[in-house]
Image (tube, rainbow over all chains, first blue to last red; front, top):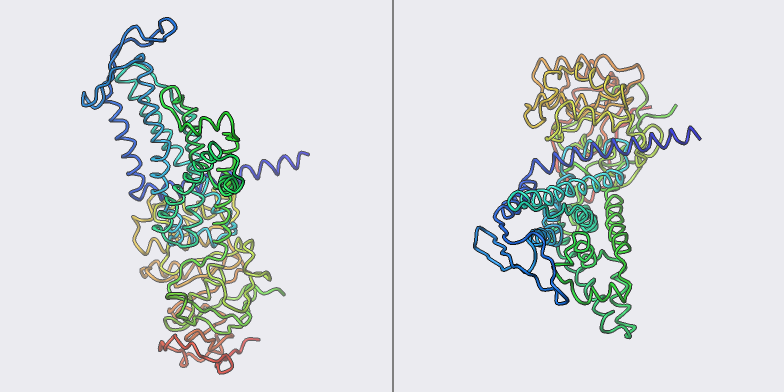
Length: 324
Length: 256
């Protein structure tokens, strides 16, 4: 028993150490290029945008009677007065609205696609680097190298997403005096969304050894998955009795990542449903059909991990460091 | 006794161009065996196939046909790479690491852990005069210092087989003399070396065996004392003989 425990501890320590070195290598590789500055620039722009927000009116509005009509109105000012909106909600809720709007895009489609764009070249560049020679002449299996790389990049992107979420929340608090919530639950959903497509990007990078191919393929794949996800839910909402249509949209829906489902989950995690409506079909499906958020998370993440393992399998026979 | 490295009918063909239409023969029918404690030098002109052979030994490349064994096991089994140290041509290193961080990472990858790892990193930096550069980034270093870092990475885990591809390139005369001293005092009597170089004057006194390649063909394989230095091929010939017949190859293998 004690020996098994010691062996398990040693394996866990080894995994943690290997992940630490991969993380260091990946971080140094990301930070030495322009990609990190693009992502940091995007975070800075969002933070500066938050600094231009100003709200007036009561903090929390008490509803009056059955009609739920606010007693007082406030004003939301964005971009130093360029955009003004009359508020039918309290100032605290208005700050939360602005934060939710930023998080829905920043941790949603724009954030995921931007991170995919910045990470698409990492594996093809790695295969031409000195790191590849060092790693591939060591006794570490290549699939393990790829898996460590997969998790290292997810951790880096999640850290950046956390920075985005916290810096926007902090700057909104600074200028308005109201804390909109950290939005860290949304960061977890972002991590799953990114992981699902980063695995695919790694596979294309390993097959083609081209950054451009990995970038184009992963962005197109995101669009296809979004389309499949929405069409499956639409089919369930309107054409539920047609067996052929059900199979045609159901099979790819269950196999592929589910960006639309994850977007709904993100909205729920950051509390955006009180400000924005989702697709009516998605809301319906949440009640009627088989939209199960946890199943969407598990299947999307499993897809990404499977793709990363396939990339590792592909690298088994990849030749490094030759010029015919 | 198990060979440290064994090649049987080893061939390597590079495919390039659209749909792999162009074939470049890098190695043809190499039969070679390296025993424990031997010091081999691989000689030959440019494009003879020296670097390709070394990359095949460390599994960076896959043979097109034939077999390659490390420590008696197929080269596809990566576990034996823990007993190998490799210095690549041009000392290609991850540019964004510090010297000490990189040596530590390399030691970790090759199975060193804890206090032993720290002790080996310290002694290796000392051995290769890299203490002053420990915190310097690789990209800030000159080519000669980078070459020394590459050698330190190969030495750090005290491997049984050391594979060196043009290790003297970029070294100034004092570093070269220092490295020749390191090579002349092996880690242990059983440490095996395979060195590809053009430094004939040094290897004449250092190596025990020689493998001579020309245009991918094995011209000589055996004790260096029996090698006729006047016959060293120096002219690089056309490497694109797609129709070369295996039976017509002239292989002079004197090895036992």
